[in-house]
Image (cartoon, rainbow, N blue to C red; front, side, top):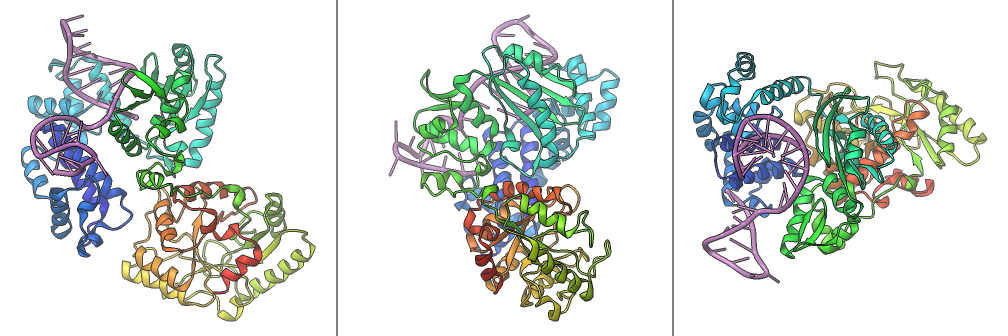
Length: 572
DNA sequence: GCCGTTTTCGGCCCGACTGTTTTCAGTCG
């Protein structure tokens, strides 16, 4: 039995909810929530750390008590304190906490006074008008709770970053039409380029905030207005996305942008630094007593706590503050650094466009090279290439290269890694290629051991170059393969295999966390569009976003190099 | 429950909006 980090975190979160309903010390509650966040944010398997007898108290926020509780969870799968607490308060109460406008106090009231513990019971009680009789509850609160239940039911999970962009843009453009709005910026996880976005946090600077809010709530994509004040407002759009708008004066722009960009954990740490210097940071600025001493720009806020500017993509409480203190922040890769694409398909298999069209489109992007990687024969969803078809494509590429002025088309293929770890074309043909891109497209449910060894065996093949979409996850659709990522990373390092960061918005695989670990291990990454059309070559941008979040610099990424340098890396 | 280059006790990030109040608690981000 392996206990995953998420399960440990979930137990701590549930315990925090129940203790809070129980009226426990709020700081103790916070400590458990902190612990949940720390555990789920760890790059490593907590179960492995425990089995290696690591000192867990080295993580700030984990003390002696929590370290012991983590060990017990890993060993037994249970948290005794949670079990005890659930004897007093049913665990289902923590689900009621998920309903908007219900917090610990109200959940406690409806449980203790009305014996309600499920959503259905809650709905019935509201319909019978029982809730409004409780102290502190009224008709409007009842309505809000009903709305909250509905919202929770249809709660779209976080949407993909790429899907959020058109929604954010239409909102930003609309706000810019307001003559009272100066700066308009979308902050939050959107600005941190996180792979998914939960809601949109819009920041506006203005002298007359009320006017901006008045304009905002008239946006025709709004379904419900949840709140409307003088400096902030929250709405839900028809698309189901929640939007929080905040309006501040110009002199607070940087402080507000920092505050609204998050992450929350990052902000808390920055504020803690301020407290040590006897300063106070809020969304209006940095204050010494009552006097604002910074806040117009984000840099001015960081400067006051002795830090250089930190890129939004790094603000995840993953060591960026420590790195900033030591002036060891990475210079992040940018789209301009990319000199070619190493994963793209044509209409010979499942792409939309011809070999020539793909090459022209890559040339138009200023690339020096483009690897054409149509699927190998085993892929059942398309007409995968057999040896003969691939030979024909190789000749076509030679012919095309003779015509092209700057771009070089690289001969490649996306090879299936078969169940036994073999590649599905023989070495005799693979040796004719510049590189191979290898991936798993079948048998997703093998045991962890078999799946891991399947990939490692594939890496043993001398013609294996890049492991494509290494974990196989599809955002919001398919979980990652059950693999021992540590072993795979070690094998990639050992065998000098390149790992792909697939830039398709629904893949972004490797993810940010594994990119950072790979970088620390010295493993090279290829950021690839996996384009199935000329237009999709531009999804490279999303790969760059994820790479920033994984702390990658130009030198960590192979397709920032010249073709000559690249070919040396391929010959391993 | 965690933590300490002023502290091993006494703090713990900070403010806006709503609804039910009649000065503020609860919730949220």
